[in-house]
Every structure is written in structure tokens, then in C-alpha cells.
Amino acid sequence: MTIAPPRDTAPFWDRIATRYAARPVANPEAYALTLERTRAYLRSTDSVLELGAGTSSTAITLAPHVARYLSTDISSGMVRIGREKAQAAGIDNLTIEVGQLGDPALDAGPFDAILAFNLLHLCPDPAGEAAKAFAALKPGGYFISKSACLGSGFWFLWPVTAVMRALGKAPPVRYFTRRWLQEAIRKAGFEIVETGDYPARPPSHFIVARKVPD
Image (cartoon, rainbow, N blue to C red; front, side):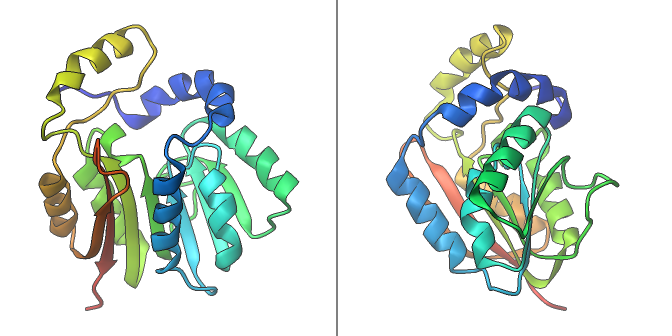
């Protein structure tokens, strides 16, 4: 399947940014559990990078629990809304920037934790993103992600998403299994310490991976 590079999809996300920001969380229970499990790995002294952060709702929730939080997205529209929300919330340790991991203009770290929620299945090379995260983490740091894993039992959705992409109503989506994603993260050098599905159907697979110190 051919998938456009992430930055090529920025106009799509810019176009829907306002509607996206107004949309309620689809599964509040699963989202709350994701936040709870993520916070369990964050410390008050941590420096955190979030990738594909959208309008930074998660960043605004998690930033008060750490020392420094950098929230990023390829969409300038999403970033603008995120900055407005952060200012209204009075979060002073949160920086929100346009970009993605590896951009020279962004802080290269190293970070104590890198978060990527609902992102890897939208990337043409999830394994490459995991490898970049590994390089940007401190030894012992965590790469925490949650991804739609549609490669087992959900191929019937592919024609639907293909039509929606053709109509400009959906971004490219990569179909992979939980096992494939876990193996890609391990090959990047990580030790997987926790997994879960929040929600279970369709599986939105949560992975906590640790960069083992040398």
C-alpha cells in the first residue's frame, strides 16, 4: 500500500482542525485508562515530547505532571488551536510547535519520554518512527504509543478508507497487526514492558516500550 509522507497530509489536518477540536472523545473510558497508564510512567522531573499531538488536549492534561512538555503536530491549524487552549488553561511548562521527530528546528532531546497516540498507523514507516524515538530518548526512557491495529480482521475497512481518502475525507491509514507493531518496536531496540487495548474493538493498541540502558 502506498502512503504519503506524514507532512504531505498536513493540509488535510489543517482543513479539519476546527471540527476535530470540537469533536468529543469517542471513548472516554478508554481515553481515561490510556492517560492513567501513561501517567504511571511519568515523573515530576521528566522532559516529555508528544508526537502527532493534534490540538494538544492530552498534552494539557499531562503537562502538569512533568517538568517540561513539548507538544508537536505537522498541522499548523492544530497547533494554533492547541496554543489557544494551553493559554486558556494557564499551562506554563508546555510548548506547542509545528513539526515532527527529526526536524532540525525542534528540540532533539534527549527526552525522558516520547508519546505517540493515534499516530503510528498514519505513518508510512512506523518502524522508522520507533527508531527515531529510540535515538531521541535518554537511557531508561519510555516510548509510549497507542495505535489502531487493523491488520487482523479489519481488512474489510480498507476499501472504505480508500474511497474516503480519494474524496479528501480521510488521511492515509496503514494496516498492521499488534504482533507486527510490537516486533517493529522491539527491532528499534526497545524492551516492551506493558501492552493493552483501549478500546479492544477495533483494537487501539497501547504499548509502553523502554530504552534499556547500556
